[in-house]
Length: 437
Image (cartoon, rainbow, N blue to C red):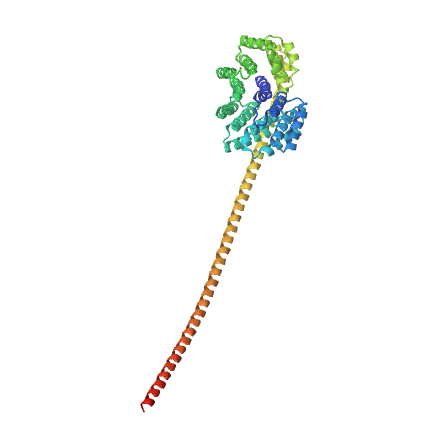
């Protein structure tokens, strides 16, 4: 019974968490942001589709991807509310494509994926939520974005709570608190504290649970609805302790608070009503209330306990048998989800390995190509140098031959000139001698 109470309260936190954190994360102009913020305040209203489409079309006309993201962000919760999960998925795919390379807008990217994971959990697509959360954590870790890691661990903590693993839920939610402080996103802390309080109640760590409620209520001025959530958590805490006086006080306070009917979903209120009626011994009224519960497990848990209190053991046994069968089905489903996650992650790992292999192969091919080109260039240079050396040797031989021919010619000229000089002297001598005679 406690588990179903907590699941209903968790669903309430998921639905109310986003509205308190409307931030201009895409840094658009004030007028556009106010239109978007108005839509976010009524995020499940089908009329938001008109506003979402107008923002998206403005993005198309102005080639502004930020406007497109705002439109898709408004469309996603409405598609979830209408049960159009395929359309919901496509909005997220497009947001991923638009923002995949925009590291400066990661906060909007992570917060959108976080909200998407919440919707996946509420539609029992838990294995998909796990894969999204782990992918978010890897990206945030690689880019050193603590806000992204906070969102990822918060989702993983909620999933562990959904699977009834309070110790693992606490471990992941505590990590989310640490990264929230590191990212300075204190507005996320009160919801995280309430989630931690719920998990500590499951482990019967009541002092720690109450401490977390106190920490959450410190943010009441900033986040007024947190008081209702803390009071609902304390009511469950006191019931688990068997402290019915304090449980009745919390229940009466909640019933007198006008915010309770607005901020708590129907199943959460019905669960508390049944717990109150059983504590008062009003078992027939509690049975009638139990039939109104949307959760099959919660209905069977309550009816089994009520029939046992009435002494109707056949009915109690029948409801208990159905309850155990439902829990077995849930257990098998969780195992199948774990196998699906493992299979998907193995496929992703194989894809990453194949990508790395192809990358290494491409790098090797590029290196070999570079070496071949270098070898060809080097060989070309060697051939050119060899040819140049041959040409130089030929030119040198030709020059030497021409030089030798020139020297021979010069010697011939010199010999001829000497011969002519000798002839002139002979003639001069003859001429002189003839005069003497």
